[in-house]
Amino acid sequence: MRFIVTNELGKLAKRLRILGFDTIEYENAKTPELIIKALADDRIIVTRSKSVGEKLPKGTIVLASTDIDEQVRVLCEKLNLKIAKEKMFTRCTLCNEELINVPKDKIEKLVPPRVYEAQEIFKKCPRCGKIYWQGSHLESINNLIDKIQRGK
Ligand SMILES: [Zn+2]
Image (tube, rainbow, N blue to C red; front, side):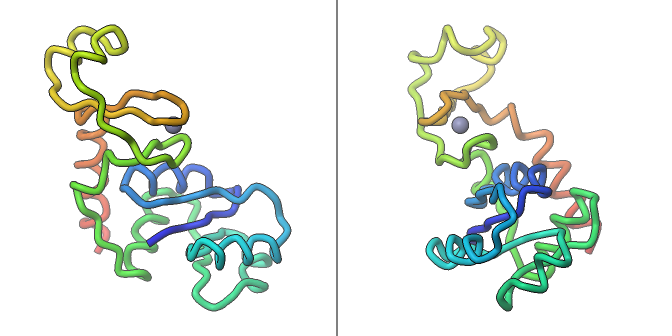
């Protein structure tokens, strides 16, 4: 499932990427273009703007809450989203690119020594170059899953 979120939901976009969902942000307020983009890419539109939401096609998700945890919970509920640990840690939280595996020996100078020692699997964003490793997300991921499940 892929998403396009309007620009007031930047935090949500980041969170969805952490959870492994392909999510782009839509910067301006021209709804026809937003709809075309969503259709072209087969993305679900998510917005917090009621006035924008009214002009958008069926299936658009209009969120009421400003709370990020609540927003994720509502999305999961409405779309019956499955949060899977193995899907997390697959996408750059900044650019939405899919991460690529990088051999450990290529990474030594790019991460803190304690991380290099402790981790075996490293991934890199092909666009911005940000390095990810399991530990960089894991704790927050477990918290996220707890929060989503507690909300139900
Ligand atoms: Zn990136």
